[in-house]
Image (cartoon, rainbow, N blue to C red):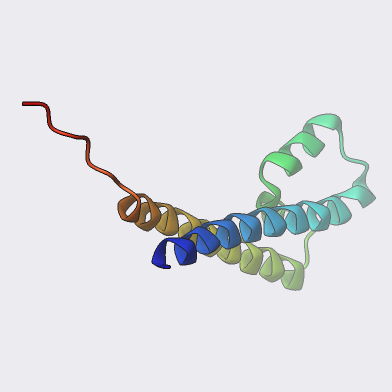
Length: 99
């Protein structure tokens, strides 16, 4: 029963991290699209969408929103990683000893 709980926590944490990443990418494209970004800028937005909060064209409210998404992303990632650690400890089967 405990194994299933941590399996659900792994899936929930990883899914939450992916959803937050996608939302941050969409929001970053919305912020930068007014300035006609180059291909390199678009690639940077996909690789790290939270970096747009340091741009000069971003308002304080938008920067705060990106900071909150960044915190939520790392919390979701930490939940997934911690759940993987617990799940692997719960499902570990020691190898049989040869004599």
